[in-house]
Length: 253
Image 1 (tube, rainbow, N blue to C red):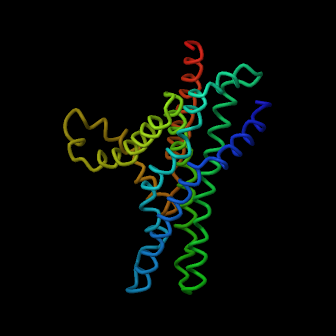
Image 2 (image 1 turned 180 degrees about the vertical axis):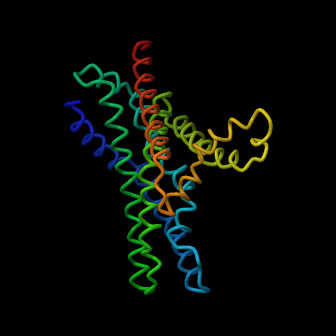
Image 3 (image 1 turned 30 degrees about the vertical axis):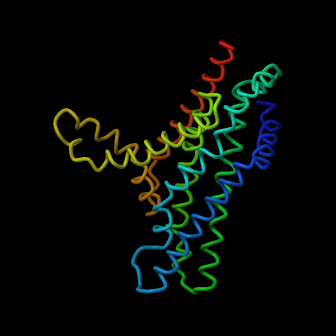
C-alpha cells in the first residue's frame, strides 16, 4: 500500500476539477438549504417535540441517491473507456491501491459535503436563539450515521463504476442499487407478509439491513454494534467485488 497516499491525492485533485463534482455539490447544498428553510419555518411557529436534527436527517436518502452516483460514476468507468486504467495498472501500483484510492477520494468529498451542512445548524442557532438547533445527541448521532452509512453507499457507487465503461450506466446502476438498499429495504420492513409462514426467517435479515431503522437508532443515541458490522462488512464486500471486477476485465482485455 506504499503508493496509496500518492494515488489518493491524485484522485482528490481529479475530483476537484471534475464538473460532476460541482454539480453534485450544488444540488446537494441547494437541496439541504431548502430543507433548512422548511425546518426554520416549522420551528419558528408552533413548538415541536422532535429535535430539528431528527427532521433534517429524515430525507438523507434523496441527496445520497443523487450525490453518490455523481461522485463515483467516473472513477473506474471513464478510465476504462479512455484506456488510462490499463496504463495505470502496468505501473508498480496494485489494483487494490487504485480501487481504495478512488473510494477514499469519493468518500472524503462525500463526508466533507455533509460536514459543511453543520454550518446551517450554527447559523440558525445563532440568529434564532433556539438551543434545539444544537441538540447534541441527535446531531452527533445523525452525523455519525451519515459517516458510517456513507462508507457502504460510496463503495456501492465504486462497484457500479467497476462494472461498465459507461459513466451514464454506472450512475444509473449506482442510483438503482442505493434506492433498492434504502427504499426497498424500508418497504420490505413495513410489509406484513414477511411475518407469515415460511417468510418469517427473512424478517431478521430485512431488519438487520433496514437503513431507516439504523438512522432512527443513531438519532436516539443508540449505537448498535450490529449496525456498524453491517456497514463495515457491506463496504468490504463491495470493495472486494470492485477489485475482482477490475482484475477480471484486465484478464479479458
